[in-house]
Amino acid sequence: MVYVDTRDKSIQVSFRDATLWGMNPQTGGLFIPGEIPPLNRNFFLKECTPSFRNVALEISRLFMGDEIPEEGIQQIVAEAFPFKIVVAPLSEHTYTLELFHGPTCAFKDFGARFMAQVMSYFNKDEDQPLHILTATSGDTGSAVGSAFYGVPGIEVIILYPKGRISQIQEQQIGTFTGNVHPVAVEGSFDDCQFLVKQALTDVELRKELRLSSANSINIARLLPQAFYYVYAARVIQDHSFNDMDISDPEIIFSVPCGNFGNLTAGLIAKELFPSISGFIAATNSNRTMPIWFTSGNYIPCPSTETLASTMDVGVPCNYERINTMYFHENLKKNVAAFWTDDDGILNAIRSCFKTTGYVLDPHSAVAWAAWKECCSCFPSGKADFFPGQDYEIFPGLCPYLPQWAEMVREKKAVGVVLATSHPSKFNDTIAAAINRTVTLPSKLQRLLRLPITSVTINNDYSELKSILMSYL
Ligand SMILES: *Cc1c(COP(=O)(O)O)cnc(C)c1O
Image 1 (cartoon, rainbow, N blue to C red):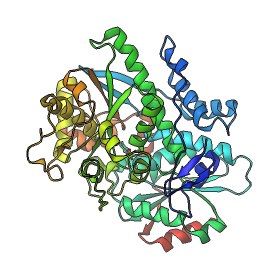
Image 2 (image 1 turned 180 degrees about the vertical axis):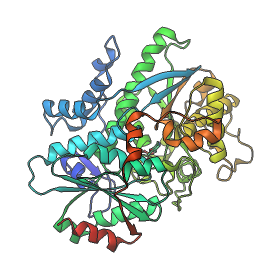
Image 3 (image 1 turned 30 degrees about the horizontal axis):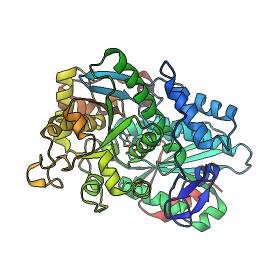
Image 4 (image 1 turned 90 degrees about the vertical axis):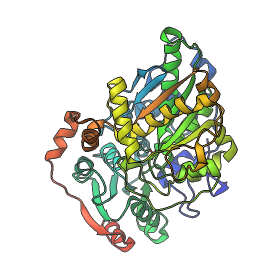
């Protein structure tokens, strides 16, 4: 399989280079798969639902099987996913896909751990260390740090916006030692992301250091996120034979979006497994993408702070991938768009808890609200269900109908709400919404007692560069 540069499709590289480079330093482009082959039909005709790891193996073979032998792929998958993944019914026609059972209790463990294993596979014959740079708005940093912690030959530098992540997130990221180096930046997440981009495109620096990136820019972090969409769709199809009133449901994933890596992976999963019918791209007040989906105008803007803080992204880096892979009109057929503000987040946590007893974290709450909105708006069957069309100003669904809206109206669809973080990581918000808190898993409790080791820098590339040069 070749991987293609989003800015110049004549540039085609191997999976190894796409992974180790992160992005193309010459063009600034990101890598996307040259093609998305459909999964082997036999795989889906089997009697019983495959395990998550089987799905992971099958898809990995398609995307990297020509470069990594079978034993290598098996080892990568086994090391990357030693934890459970839960698909559970929440209420009628609504499921949750719990992606927070990994070591850092957030879905980013899937991408980060797989990428760490792939990089360590490709790095095993090198004698110079590989330096991995990543910008985080909260959960990426801990997932990446934990995934690479102790991996020989790899040093990780994590940039996070000082004071703009939750206390537990800072305890998760700021306490790393050894080969993982936390850096607090006086600035926003977008500033951190821009500093990383500057370093990765700094030709002079790259002559001295082997550099790579590890946010959702990296294709090896994106691909494994396709695995759980396919797995969940299979599980739900099997459920529907047994205990649902609809025999062959349309499966709609509601995705809480920030940098749009998760949605991009979903779109790849849909090509692999066409039984996935569509998506809802759900954001907080940072609504650059819902506006682009609706109007076709992409207007990047500074991020605003919200209760779903890891989704506070004003310039989502995967816009570039989505825009290269899909025509805008096709996208609107498959993906509805929704955004909500902090009141909407609190209301969703409250209302889901009241009606189902399930506690959502603030990010997953955005996705739950989006699916509920589809269930109540689409039955009107009209694109003008939203009075005034002022979707840029008032939260809610964006005023256009995806192809699958009809199926929601006829109650032939199930919504799968991606639960991306354990709610206990956001207990302040949970308490504000429902007047109670959720117990922190023991793996997180341990972290609260460790000292912060991060260094603080200004939003100034020369300061980052001198830290990097000190590793020489
Ligand atoms: C990162 C993150 C998201 C957003 O995912 P993207 O791939 O950046 O769109 C949503 N929820 C949580 C908890 C996250 O950490």
